[in-house]
Amino acid sequence: MKNTILFLAISMFYFLGSAQVSGGFQIFEHKIKKRIDILFNGNLLTAYNYEDSLKKPVLFPINTLDGITVTRGWPMQPRAGERTDHPHHIGMWMNYESVNGLDFWNNSTAIAPEKRNMYGNIRHDQLMEQKAKEDSAVLVVAASWLDPGGNVLLKEHTTYTFTAKSKQFFIERNSTLTAQNKEVIFKDVKDGFFAIRVARELEMPSTQEDLFTDAHGNKTAVSKMINNQGVTGNYISSEGIMGDDVWGTKGRWTLLTGKKDGQEITIGILDHPSNMGYPSYWHARGYGLFAINPLGKNVFSNGEEQMNLKLNPNEAVSFRYKVVIASGKHLTSKEMDLLADEFK
Image (cartoon, rainbow, N blue to C red; front, side, top):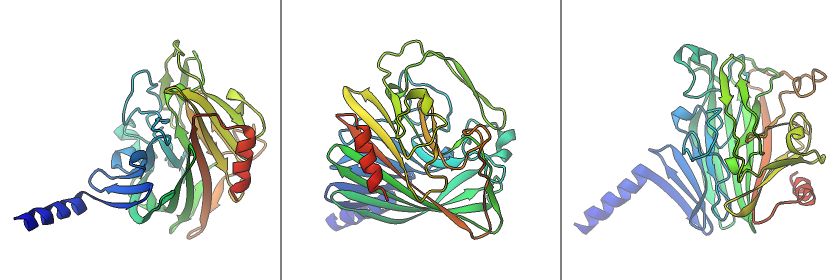
């Protein structure tokens, strides 16, 4: 009887998910939930989510080493007082507004059925590798960028490397996109490319009411937020530019500082010198969208530059980014410069 119970328990464990545990970092895969958890000392740092409804894989939520959530909860885990704009802004992700004329960036379940033929989605295909050690973890995944008919435009190979040092949590993403059997064009547009949507407390204080329109004319209203209590965010770039002025400027890094749950928080994104267009333009918005876009030059440069990246069949392009999430103190520009110097 005991052997039967043990056998059933082990079978259920492998059916529901699998884990790799070693020291500080642990990786646990929930196959039914389509989620892979990354833990450190038993606490969730982030999870790789690939539910079909998300329209692309995302890291969500993202927490500091001491358990403070820095990402917006809505629409996956709504929290009181959050903005409910841009339902496609979920956790941390990488996609683009115009790939062979299809909008991958703005796709979500909010798109009306009669308009879904204008949107693409990214499908998780395979967990290729997972490794967990005391101070780092690696997740290697494969995905496909699909048109509305399910045809593969791009194959994606992504390696996530997670590390912990002092009170700093690092996420490095290294992605290679390979065109399949036809030419792929990334039209020069504003919305992209590597991004995180932050918690309300890390937004910049504002009472402005905005109306946002995507490439297909869909409008999203951002209501007035008269109560800015606890809203503390501010951007600073490697060029010393601050606040809303960071948007549309170039820099090898940008950081967002603020305060949440009684702790000083920093989120910094580092561009890699090997990325095309380095240093890239920052698509950093006060309402909580923190993004870098190496492929959209026309809007940010007021028409002085143009990109329109073209990949021939079987041609590939790679992008590499590093994110630091720190709690307990704000990182300084000097510290970010040192991190950028190390990111080679």
